[in-house]
Amino acid sequence: MTRSNDHKAPARRDALKGALGLGLTGLAGVPAFAQDALRLRIRTLAAAVQPKVVSWRRDIHQNPELSNREFNTSKKVATELKRLGLEVRTLAKTGVVGVLKGGKPGPAVALRADMDALPVEEKTGEPFASKAMGEYEGNKVPVAHACGHDAHTAMLLGAAEVLSMIKADIAGSVVFIFQPAEEGKPGGETGGAALMVAEGALDAPKVQSIFGIHVWPEAAGVLSFRSEGFMAAADRIEIRLKGTQTHGAQPWKGVDITALASHCVQAINQVTARQLDPREPTVITIATMHGGARFNIIPETFVLGGTMRTFSVARRKDAIEKVTRTIKAQAQAYGADAEIIFTPFAPLTFNDPALAAYLTPTLISSVGAKAVNDKAIPNTVSEDFSEFQAKVPGLYCFLGIVPPGQDPATAPPNHSPYFDIYEPAMEVGVRTHALVALSMLARKA
Ligand SMILES: [Zn+2]
Ligand SMILES: [Zn+2]
Image 1 (cartoon, rainbow, N blue to C red):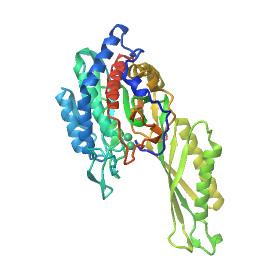
Image 2: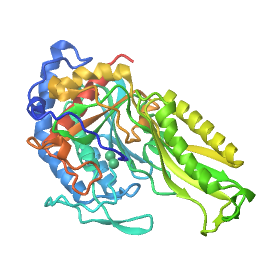
Image 3: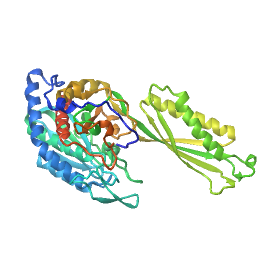
Image 4: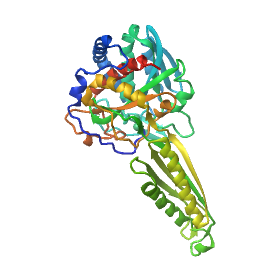
């Protein structure tokens, strides 16, 4: 995900113990008589496949590739899926989709992982730490899996292996989606979840619902999410101010656009503070101001750039209207023109409330009630899993990866050069993917 804040979840030190113990509640949608046997089988298979998952993760970790450049990762994924007998197709540049057809008729559901790494120099000190270099915006940069997408890819391959082994008992199809460029496509390129959707990742077969996991600095094995707006909608803001150029000594002969620009920044901060209900979080940031070339010339134009993070469609609309109105009024006061442009960067990661409620018992069956937090706080980072959720109901959740005994509050955040994962937690991810797939298949459309 594109990280922008700190998310401090409550520490749950005993979570892994709970996560590795047998769950006590039901597996949604699966008949009661079949539940225990199936759950136990998945648990056993996920444990059996764990050494492979660890070796996949380390291999991908050691060979990270930037967004839209996941050439080798994509090949490895396709090879593994073909080995399992899945129908495999490539799309959206380096994306891979594998379809597992169960032995019984039924609907299709999807599980998703992202595969790209970041321009970050790894400093974890792991024996399998990345030493890779890549090219980012014309510069040679170190590359590392500082957001854990290596683990996402490995866990989803593990789930594909587990579900392949119980294929005969599966009623319907499971679609495994490995997408490129979650962290953002390079300038001028298309890519990521939006392109996967456009090229039919959810269409053949037609997917009924989708599930995804992101590793996060919480206690290992904890699954956390919230219903409805979970991760922010991100919009890019551009404000173009235009006045009349004048001498710095004679501001009244033109428009003091520099003063207007500074008023606009303050006015926007006031919108968040005074015009929007604070019970729902909103972040509006002006990060850049560009204008002028010389100390004694007030320029004709000024451009402000920033970002907005919102958690509901209604709030996004309201904030856009209020920012636009406020900036227009400021410009009018100065006799200038203002153009305010909001460009969606990622839609709201919206967890379908009905699906979230339906799957909560399944998550509990995977890790135990103590290790499921269904009331996570809204997170101001954005995530393009939202593009899939805009098409079909979806649930996105965090999986804790901080080792037992370490306070998650002190763990390096995603995108840090020190970001690392506690590998035994991946077994929880594999198991959860597999259990959720079966539950989603059993859900009445
Ligand atoms: Zn990420
Ligand atoms: Zn990220």
